[in-house]
Image 1 (tube, rainbow, N blue to C red):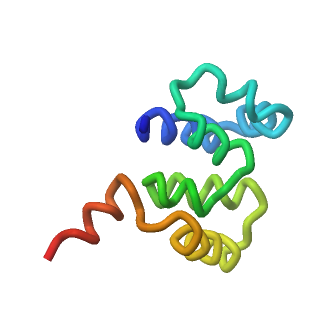
Image 2 (image 1 turned 30 degrees about the vertical axis):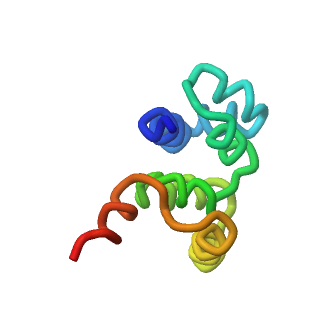
Amino acid sequence: MSLYALQKVIYQINRASESMSKYRENPAAFTAGYELTDEEANALHAPDIGLLYILGVNGQLLMHFAAACGYEWSAYVDAMKQGLTVHGPVRAGLYAVAGKQQ
């Protein structure tokens, strides 16, 4: 998995409206320059907010990306819950580590 690359592409999309426009026009073309797994690329192309959460995307990045993709707050939270149901526990990132600490 390439969590850094996944988060980098989301950061690029979040930071400029031009990037978001290019992403919306053709998600596959926009993400082609990043070293992503097929699962990561597909999650971005959908966009599948629940799977992106499970893959470990930082909450601040994901929240802004989801909002830019048209998710209302409650839909964003529901998408993360659905991600847990469909894809299992968070695989990487802060949420995976935090869940293992006592």
